[in-house]
Image (cartoon, rainbow, N blue to C red; front, side, top):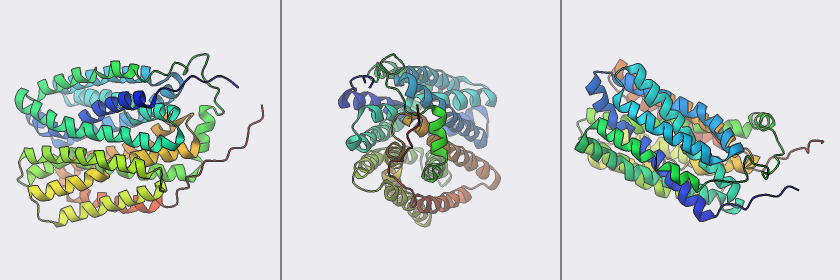
Length: 404
């Protein structure tokens, strides 16, 4: 039996991984704050801005698959460093692009590629390889909660930077902040990966993919994650403009996004803890159904700052709480050898939903002058996702031992 390197300490993995996710997710959660200043400065439509973010989500999803493969084989360190550099370049491009094409290339392609290398799929691969299965769901919940704390911390900070220094200078400051992920990535170095001491895999990449895509529960998890992407990215990007259209001040939107991040800290952590005790499919079904109910009540209630803050708090509890049970279920079913790659494929489905959510928000608004249709789609998809998660089978897959 080949020797296996000593696992990284739990504290080291969680501190470094959580800090990286805090920066990466915290910055991207505030992009909706730039919709109004960017479009007004350039004379662009909301669809132009939305399309760039839609490309970003697709780029993130597509690149995430390959980032996961590299992280599984070579370790997370190299992938995160490359992602941090791309993030800085993308934010500078977002600040100084003079045409929609350049804006889509930098804000869309570059930042999407950067996020693929600095967020959950890569960090969860490290967690899966270095944390005992009995604590894996909890540890994933801690990392997801860190991303939520990043939203709570970064979104108001981004709003303050815009108001104090202007939207371009704010983006330049954030570009410098992303480079802090480089030293943090050093704490996630796994010396055995990619070297002579790395453990032998029982499956090739092709075998792991064939197994996963032929397994119905994997397909159902992907479909549910599609809905997650549609809902959260539509709300995260278009809620500030929706509230402004209704006559509420920009500060209400900033506080709302911050509340989503704050309550998501508790929601994602709770989902991770509950994933150690309850069936993950039932947790996911509840989350998606609760989102549909929350959106319905938000649209039915009279709109005011108070109703916005209540909605943001409830949605915050449900926001990224799908992440720990979904990824923990993938690890439980298929093991951790190819976890970053398989998580990347599941997340690719999430990003297809994100693409449609953010782009349809801008497209239908420009065509109808309202976000109503997209809100209704988000409600229907929530019910759909709740139903399709119920048949998921979480038991570890039984493999026939291949002959030598």
